[in-house]
Length: 434
Ligand code: HEM
Image 1 (cartoon, helix red, strand yellow):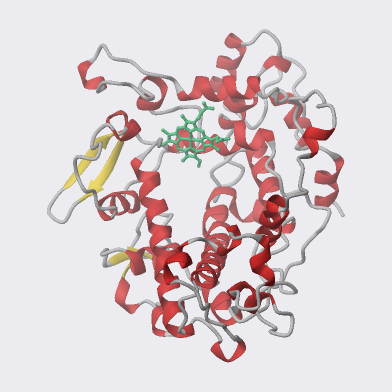
Image 2 (cartoon, rainbow, N blue to C red):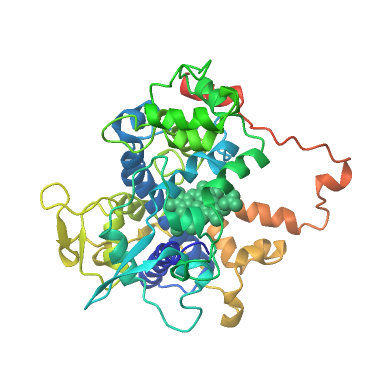
């Protein structure tokens, strides 16, 4: 666990899942755990996709890059079977680690009667609390809502550069820990990702031929540092150089190389996902109405509906501002709890005739035969005559795994050597330039 503050956001969405599951349980009047779990999960995924593409990515990439990579959620979109939704090595080992530059050394925490700051290195591995206290998520979320992040640039918090996973508080001066930036650079090398210059070419930026040619995207002072650290321009690592680029636009946080990699990754995650919620031709079922409702929900709605926080700014990812981002009372928001989530007229549920205790086991993990048992709740949701729930492919995957004849293909054939090289095939480029 790298930060308690991540955990507070995980808990927020866990509560949202349970809130939706409870609401569906009442509306559908069923105890069918698997149906309620899968339905709530489906709704939370829509909500998350909506928040990521409507609130998070525009803040990160700005208008121009949102359009360039077709990330806007206006109107219906279409699944592209040729889009590869797997995660690029350069995305995980470098580009999406841009967030490390935004981290503060001290994190604000707002309790009802006081505001305090927690030092980051006191929190690593649960050190500060270690099961000694029950900790509410609200003071941490309020702190996150009301503290500015650092810019994405070539500077990093001392707590991350010198005290990562440190065993003692740096207040005791002599104690040092790891260096997250060094880890990021080393991880890129471990994974064999290409150098910065190669990514400039991939992203249609002018390649650098010598140290006399400063990239226009970088300040002179920053470029001088690279000059003093590397012998050849083609040795420069992706992470430190791309993070030091100036933002592409005034409404964006990242430079052109990371904007390109992140734009491409989220393009593929959207168009390569058969069930992405804006692909209107799929997934229409009894949850249709609530799926539409989830599209209206913002991160601040999720905070309002699952915490005791009473006021949140409209755009939770931006700092409050009386004109551009006013703080609003939660109760005047349009919480869906007042409305019905499921189109009950459009679903038939068979109640399981089983010991309720056994309900705790996810049905997808039952024997494959359960699917063919006439009393199985899965039968009800799979019956093609009941035009409702579509079987998530995960069921199929489990079913195959449990099939006695199933054998791992790697057991059959001799294993091939693994190439730790960046996969950056033509298909990625074709999607953007059809
Ligand atoms: C207190 C805040 C944070 C801490 C202490 C932290 C720490 C870490 C550590 C120790 C790693 C593993 C590094 C390695 O050995 O390769 C890591 C990986 C990573 N971090 Fe962070 N991080 C923080 C915040 C963030 C944020 C805000 C983002 C993005 C917006 C982010 C994105 C990533 C990504 C994408 C990875 C690679 C994950 C993987 O491929 O498995 N981190 N972080």
